[in-house]
Image (tube, rainbow, N blue to C red; front, side, top):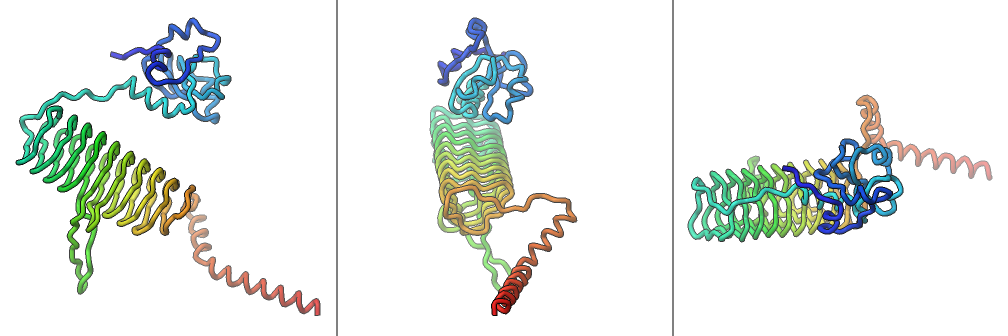
Length: 353
């Protein structure tokens, strides 16, 4: 059953300021029961407005109330909640209106628990979970159906593993993390040495060490280090289908969108933002505060904060082939340009003489 909130109840919980506009009595009685986008909101919904390019959508919306910045108050007569960061407020309100699953403290009868693994008093282990030997689980850990946790793993308090997460041996995971279905943490890194035309596997003896409040998306993989640990620091947010190779380090509060590949031993700073399908080559260093555009190939270290893009805009295929051909011949064009500049210089000198 939907839960209803008045605007005053919302700001009492989350902060902000209610501005009823010209409909004070209506606003005081107004209740909202769901979040919605401006374009698809119906009466009883609350939406948020964060960018003036959506002004027309704001003016056309059927929402009962809107979250927006104080400087945008004049753009709508609707009752509003005023806040400096409507997008973050929307996230908090969505969590308030859509509370997460309530877990029961239980260990399912089908779970297999290894030796020397002590279970805390507050714990959920669902069906068909396999937990190895000498595993340490913090209070409030929640482990979904079909998860596999190998030997000597440590998982901090209140961390949630969705169904079918695999945690390989020796991995350390902090508190309040959320690992989504299909994530594999601590698999062997991709390390081989060539000898006489064949590949010799290099043992991967490092660990994966994950900090607190880290989210790891579905089917994302983080490889264990070859010698040193692979480290994911506090507050990192990883989307689905990301590959983090061995010995990579990701700094605190960096966010990485889906389908990114990070090659071995790359070091990414704190508070970075990496767009979807970007590729980062190995052994590079990226400083704090860098933004990388989607689809970019990063082939060298980035030593200064800023936004970086490394891709050509899409074109019709025939045009793209001509553009690529021109790029391949840039060095020849540069040489011809220098020759022409020299010829012009010689002609000018001859005229002066």
